Image (cartoon, rainbow, N blue to C red):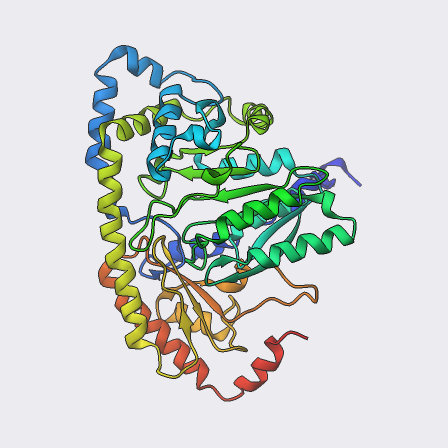
Length: 442
């Protein structure tokens, strides 16, 4: 065979890495920009701090010394003044000194969004075959990342109180009996307003999860990776402390936060607090990636935080999203058929509402429901994207993730009405009992 026809020798990691499902959904929106898009977990474009950021950039470039610093490389760990501001901000969120949970600026890294931090943590801790425990359902972008790293992802159920920590304890006990406990490296949880369900880990579950991780760290430390990307988008309910703030010696938890959701995703800047002995390995890998995140966006972020602009923007953003969340919940109550067996979550923050259809209803991308919704000009994320299959290879197909983030307020009600009409048509369709048998676990 000619060398011009030889197969490309992709790495094992590249072969494990598939296309993210969201890529198809974003392509669908580009093909029809008139679609009401409840699929994308994007922020509201009308709330982006355009004028305020313009003034910050002018201020930075009015000072030649500071402008040169903003246009130069900084350290791999990140701008010192931003790490200082991030630490002070965490202290304010937790209501306690960082020293009370063993944290200093030295244990904070600035990354290109929290997504890079999640990747780096997995990269330095996981070998192929190592185990990561997550919730079912879960943030599917990160479970895709874990698959590319060769991780075995084991999932426990979500409850109204967040990830089922008692089920985690039972799972760890089973893995210990099977002599697989030493393969467990991470417990991954979105502790505030989870993507996709909007549910939050309860106050009592937080110290309980930390206690479980400590107790089962017999041969090697099991780290809780706490994804708090939506933490500051709180519309009601209590301001809960992070799991990180309960880890007095800063040994068992990593806390990843971001400027993307509460300020501006275009900055692509996040900050992560972690144990000191994990930081060195993360920085070695980050150095291989980029030698450090964008200096300019870090200068913008620190000016926003220290000037008070960031806090003011978060308050305005929460007011805007609260109104949109309430509008979506109201539309669901008005348009979903009464007694149809459909339920949904009532999140206290974040960007997502999780809809559960009667067992046996198919909401997957190839389903009649999904196609009918697209034909009606509305898009959602099929819930099966967010699940890990059980031991029989079964995945639930009767859920929808709806995001009110980027949707214009006047599109929420007509969009929900279109989904409700499609759901009503599918639930009334003859032969649905057959669908129920096909979609039920063996």
